[in-house]
Length: 374
Image 1 (spheres, rainbow, N blue to C red):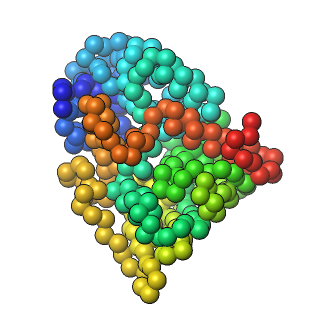
Image 2 (image 1 turned 45 degrees about the vertical axis):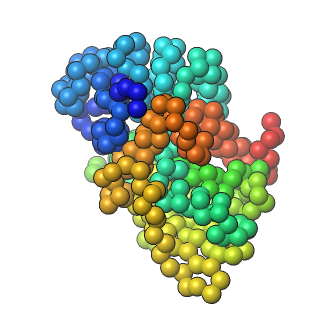
């Protein structure tokens, strides 16, 4: 480790939220980072947040934070609709950037950010931390090592938790499809990224989507609000290997299955299960069986737990994020990391947005689409 990297968080609030509950403890758990700055919606709210989190340098804009000489890595943690406007100043300043997922509201926006990052030659990272989960990394290796034989198919049934009959007023932006923070983008996007990390990319997809609850109620008050974000997404497709994939995400919570991901091969089967469909957060169980065996729990080897303190805290918001930060820190120090896409960059984020856009077009047109189609 060459030196401590100064981190500035865009969107760290005094009142809690994702940045406070996940990014702050994740950074604190990984040697080589120091939280030095934050920005908020105004100079006053930033100052209050700085006092709350013990951060001395506070700013009322992302551009001011990006210009701070003590900041090496800018972390953008607000809702997707504002990612472009907040990431651009950091890239223009030549700073490394970690942006939460979704990277943008569309593939076009993601392409703009990717191209600017390439022009500025800065390291970027997009927050697809499900692939940093010890369990998912172990699944990836089991598949690569032939534990399943040839993968024949994979299927997912999951619940989005939000996008159900009630909504939290603090996250009302999830209801608006045009804001980019949709069920397709967030929980589906995180899970399908992990699926592709383990099994390979899609070559073609066929999709259906629907808004089955066009009107939902506010928790606590019962006030009614319109929802345009899809609460049902079903995707079928082929992977590069020829394996068949099927994924169904439902809004809200089911009394039955909320996360079941099955991988079927010629020599065995694997099942990842958990309490909800946000694989980037979920405390998951792994089971498997091969010829002549009963389905049984598979213990993830200790070597996959790369950040001390989180092995017994599965499901903590910072757990997988800390693992991603640790890998990113190694990369920034020039340490070779395998696999090379362990912490995806903006170019990877653009590819993932491409998949989501193709799924959206397939659902809108009723056509089966190849990923290489315009």
